[in-house]
Amino acid sequence: MGNRLIVVFVAASLVGIGCGKKEKAIDEHKLVVPAGCKMTVTAPGGHIECADDNASFAWLPLSDSTPEQALDKGEGIITDAMSGTEIKKSTVPCVVAGQTMTCRRLDMKMKDGTLVALLAAGSLSGTQYYVECSYMAGAKIHAVCNDIFKLQ
Image 1 (tube, one colour):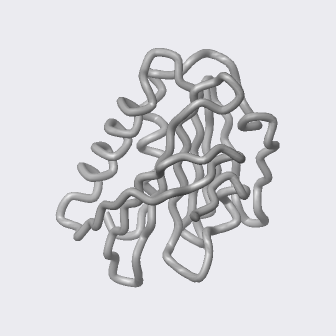
Image 2 (tube, rainbow, N blue to C red):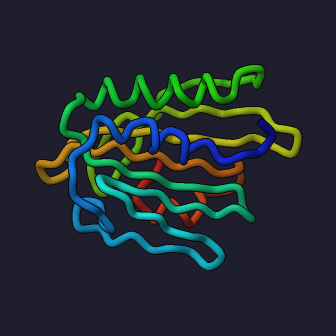
C-alpha cells in the first residue's frame, strides 16, 4: 500500500456509526485547511487530506457506537489496510479539543519513514466524536491536525 493515506478509509468505514449533520468544527473548534490540503465534508463528518505531506485528519460525531467501539473499529481498519507493515501500537496521554483523553497511537514503518496515526474518541461538550490524524513522524504533529491533538 506504500504511503497511501489510510485515514480516509477509516472515516468512510465508520460512517455507519455516525449521525446526520455536516460538521466543519469539532466542539466549536473551527477546522483550518493548511495550504496544499483539501477538506471534504460529508454527513456526518469529514476529512482533510494533505497528499503532498502524506498527512490527513478525520472527524466523525458518533451516535450509534461507544467511543471504545469506534476506536476498536478504527484501529482494526488501519491494521487490516496496512497488513504486512510493521505496526507498533501504544496508548498515550493526550488532549483532544481541550479534553484530557487517552489516545491510541499506531506507528507504521514505511520505506521513507514512520507513518503515525493518532486515534481518539470521547465526549466533547456533550457530543461523542471519533477523531484521527495521520502524518509522517517528525518533530511535531502535522498542521492538518488543527491543534485538536496535543500529546502530553
